[in-house]
Image (cartoon, rainbow over all chains, first blue to last red; front, side):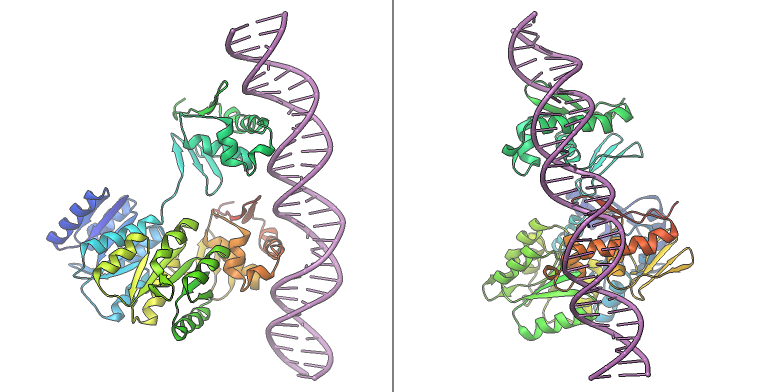
Length: 223
Length: 223
DNA sequence: TTACTATTTTAAGAATTTCATAATAAGACT
DNA sequence: AGTCTTATTATGAAATTCTTAAAATAGTAA
């Protein structure tokens, strides 16, 4: 997670930066709009803390630019203004939150986490293989791979447990509604699908069989 | 967009409900935790307004349940408590925002929109396809496209979630007033409309079906 | 109100896709 | 070789989605 702090008070921005680092976030500091613009341009931020009053202008004027670059970047405005109109203006222009100065660091911390929690995706990324369970999509080296339904679920389950042996029973329990009503052969069929549609055309080997024990997803990302 | 209001003061919850309807949101009211639990169970909410003090317990105790059902549901806590500890507690347990009572409706309005907004404005612009939900208008390569009513709303909902799979249930909850009174077939019909009136004449494919899981708007803007 | 129009919903058969099975082939181990 | 496990493929059944048209509902203007 990368956070940009746009704030000109050196004491404050340093405190914020240090505090955020403690919680495991990467953070950069910009002390004016100009620098901020540059940073936004070269890096992708998950969240931006934005002071309203900056030496070279109003922070909130940056919001449209930020949002146009990436809608997914959350913006929290920090402002000394405590009138209702300012808050509305900030939110209206696209801020995701508005916190009045002086604020409690713990509350800011919590609000940041609340914002970033949203991005809790469970995308599996191994080398240049990307599996997105939410969207039921597989991308390998930029190419989309056609694999749907049960075989996709099996692949996902295995890929999440990279290098581990997963038994057929485990797969059945995890993916089939009523595991005892189907023969274990369904998995063999699914595995076959995966090999046909993923391994074969791309010339890679993702799932290997461990005789009597199950299957193991084993893919380093290297050829 | 469907919003659940969990609030026992009848005047307030009615005001909120009416206000939200004016802005085009579907909303339901629950006056206690028990009812709320039921509603959460049967419908998918994009956002939940949650009063802290309810006749049968603390509202914030519902947050873990809400989040475990769908982490995409945003929760805004409304509370009469204005101490720092309460706010931290609410955020820590998973709330996405905390607003102290009495609050200004306009600010609440803005904060709701900040949560639900997926981009800067609400005009959806992908390549040379422009969808304007406010005016219920679609422009593709300068050409106006005739698509109104429910099918338009379905398209909008899908387009706002570009690339994501949206289930029929979610569509029903978001767009129909009483989702359980209609069959899911209405969506199939709406999708068909979209394909007839948007995809076919313009020779593009916007919404693809993901069998068993729903539909996905998938349009890069490129041919 | 009445007639007319547009939109929404229902219904039902067609078309498609997925799933599980079974039968057979291939491979591994003793 | 003989036995056991896994791979492969085809096929039929089941489930889901598509399509179309008619019925119902809501909306508008005369």
